[in-house]
Length: 79
Image (cartoon, rainbow, N blue to C red; front, top):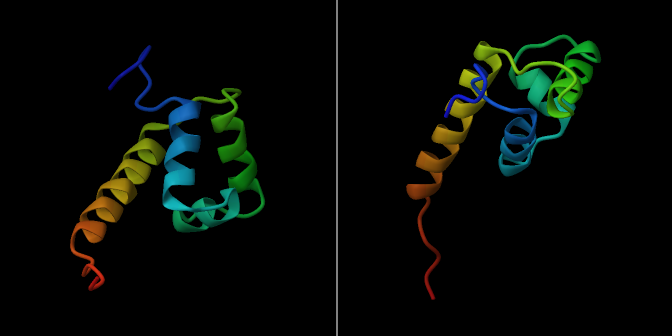
C-alpha cells in the first residue's frame, strides 16, 4: 500500500482515526504522544502538511487490525 514512499497518506490516517472512533487527542494519547503537540502533529499529517511517519502508520494499522479482529468475536444479539 506504499504511495510515493509513504506507508500511509494523510487521508488514510484520518479515515483510520474516524473508523476507530477516536478524536485527534484520543489517538495522540493512544500513540503516547504529548498533548497538545501530538494532536497538532497528527492534524498536520492528516492535512498533508507533514508526512505520516512509519511508526505512526504501523501503530494505526495495528489498531485497525485489532479492532476488526475484536469485532469478529463480538457475540451477536439474539433476534
